[in-house]
Each structure stands twice: as structure tokens, then as C-alpha cells.
Figure 1: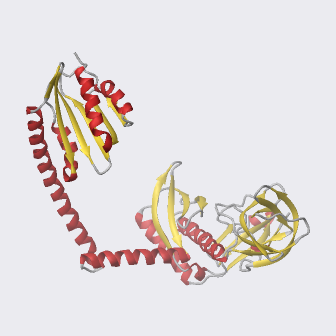
Figure 2 (figure 1 turned 45 degrees about the horizontal axis):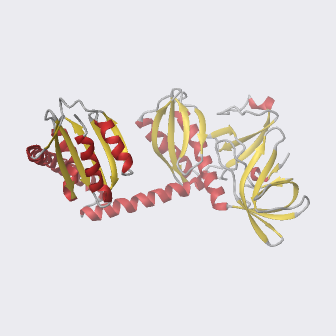
Figure 3 (figure 1 turned 60 degrees about the vertical axis):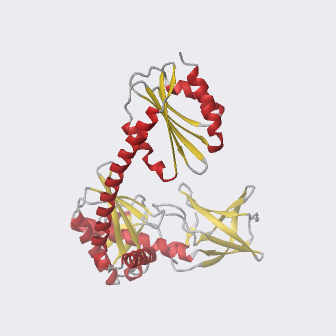
Length: 405
């Protein structure tokens, strides 16, 4: 069993120890100590990382995990190949540790707040894998519930409640108002937050709720199992997120030459104007597409099974390609639409009513020969190829058409 210094010395950042055991691989070693400050992955929380110093060389501790059967904690250290008994100095990544303590403590406050407003809102699982933390709770809280919970937990932060770890025995556990029954037996570690929260937990926590700083519920969604997933941020991460969003709102407000309180009104006006312009553009594109189609059909190439109308679009006219295809309905005509940008050609081959030729099979060999990509149905094919191959494509495709009887 490894002595868990992180449970009693949460604010310590370094320690000296000796290596108990070593397992080496090509680029790393797995080492154990008799005691450690490094928290192992578990309880929905990622492990501590940091560095190990040996003989004046510094090595990265990149992973920490625990064997539940032996309660031994293992440390993965990059490019480090020591011997048992070697003395080492270890230092954890304090910024990472402190943020995890903020997130984990926040979850305790939130879990308690949810059952205070509704006993049905019990926490089922948690995850602190990113700055956007999650907790899954039973039931379906409404928007007003989330507002109330958020106000409540931030009030508890402002009250600067003392946070401490206490150890109790199984027989004493039933006498205590524990929110979540622990999964272990024997001597049980509980996290006590004033008179507000009491729950089993083995992770390091803050010493007071004021150090959480801020808790913000970001969003929520229903998930399988009649559960709701709550997304939240807290502590330094929440403050950084607020600062980023504040700068974003400020810059957008400056762009629209308005205050943040009028920003939504200006944005809605912009959206309405854009929607109106888009509708007008669609109408114009449709009319232009019809004109191009009429002209292409008049000049269509006649082959054994029908006619081929070709339209080539480039530059700004590329945007009307779909409108042209949507407007096409001429019987006994195959439409070939070539949309050319700087480097590639996107081609559409559409068969009008009465065209019996399977266009996907007709053009497949040509697409392959010019190194193109794409395919489709018998009467609708979309493919692309390099712009340099456009004349080669036209020549080969015309030969295919001429072979149709």
C-alpha cells in the first residue's frame, strides 16, 4: 500500500523519497514509492502530473494510476531508468492540481445544492477530464432550478465554509447525514464542507469554499437512463472563460458601434437583413439559372440518344450551380454542369426525363482515367477532378457519348 500524502498534505507541492520498485520499457519506467503526493486517475478525475529529479536530471511524470487490489500507486516517468533504492525529488504540477481541487470541490457543492432543491436530483457520476466539467444527475431539472442551484453554490463560496477530511468507521457511518454512501469499507474518508456537505471521497480538495472563487453552470442536456448531464466551469477556469467571452462581446459591440445591452437587437437586425438578401439572391440565381439553361439547350450537342447541354460556371457564378440543377427538367436532355474554381472542377451530370442511359456507368471510366473522384445514381452524378484535366475530360466524355446508340 502506498501512503497517500495528497489526502493529508493537499497544498504541498513537492516531496523527497526513495524508489521502491521499477519496471522499465523502451521510453519510460513505471516506478513506485512508499508515499506520494501524486493523485492517481480515479473518481472521474485525471491524475496529477509533474516532474521527478534524480542526479540533477529532470524527468516528466506523465501518468499516475492505482492498483485497487493492492492499493499501490504507480508513476509513469518518461526516459527514466533508475534502480530500487535511488533517492529522488518529486514536484507536482501545482496549477493543474489546484484547478482540479477547485473543480472537484465545486462538484460537491453542486451535488448537495441539487438535492437541497429537489431530493430526486441525485448525482450519479462526474467527470473532470476537461475545464468543462460534467455531472450526471437523476431527473430533469428546469431552467429555474439551475438558476437557483447556481445562486446557492456561489453563496456557499462567499460564506468561506471550512473544508476538511474526516475518517470514520463503518458502524459510525449510519449515524451521519452522508449524501453519497461510499464504495469502500473499514475506515472511510469523508469530505466535510461546513454543515453543508458530507460525502465519501478520496481526492484532494480545497481548504475552504472561498477558494472555489466562482461556479458557473454552462448548459444541460438529457441523456440516456432518465438522467440530465450538467456542464459547469469553476475557479480559475471559469474566470478565464468569462474574460474570454467578455473580450469577445466587447469586440463585437465595437464592431456594431453599440453597447452590449443593445447587441442582441443589432444582431437580430443583421440576421433579418441577411435572410432577406439571401432570399433575393436565391430568386435572382434561379432566374439566371433558367436563362443559362435555355441558352445551353438551344446550343445542345445532338447525339444518338438525345442532346447534351453544357454549362460552365466560374468565379462568382459558382454559387448558382445548385439553382441551375434545381431548375433543370427538360426531357431527353443530359445536363453537364462544370463549376470551376482555382484548382478543381466540380462536375454535375443530370439526366432529364426520358434519358435511359445510366449516366453513372457512362462517366465512371472517364472519371477513373482523369484521376477524378465521385459517383452517383443513374440519372444524377457528381464528381470532381483537377482543373488541368478539363479538356481531357471533355474529349473523353464526348467519345463516350458518341458510342451511345
